[in-house]
Length: 248
Image (spheres, rainbow, N blue to C red):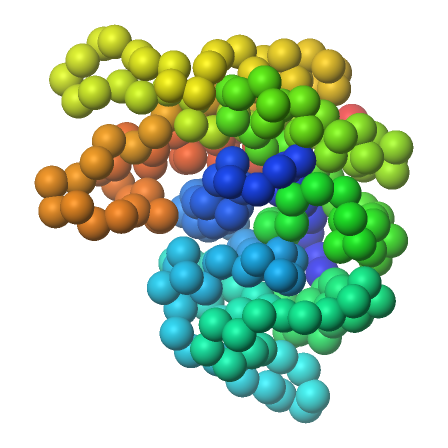
């Protein structure tokens, strides 16, 4: 069973960087000394194993799954349970069983935080998560683009109707700032995350910039110390931890 504070990272549409935000937030919380689990609930579009460069498969003990640990985070994904990069071709009822399976049949141990990387939209997995993990809180991820925020509003509205606490909004790909420059380029528009937070009556938690390209051309998905986004994610983790600790 899951312990600790469960935070679902949701979005209205794909391509906004939700899985990258989920992964780096989980790692940043772990760097704060927290016991963290990351569950990839994007059953059709799982990407956490690729992002974290995990090639192994989880072991079992007494019929329970032992999650794989990477970057100080306990990880579970549909990607561990299939061969190669085969597609998952399931109808709705099977999705609910996986949500329950990942929450009840994995040896998580005592946790401070559980980060759920949700599929985009308001479909079966979101409904099943609300049913099986009713205590979860939610963070909405969007880009500044008006279309992205318009669609993301639906995910936030669904969370509110399910009586979930929406902690706030994370605006990803907010701007690009060239190295050694004070100028910011708002490539995908501006103020989208701010307006979405106002609409949902919640907080704009972060405006995450676009990481400048590396000289070695290596594509980054996890932002370690020395990258532009490292401090942004550490600040986001500290802010969320502070919000959770606030007396009600």
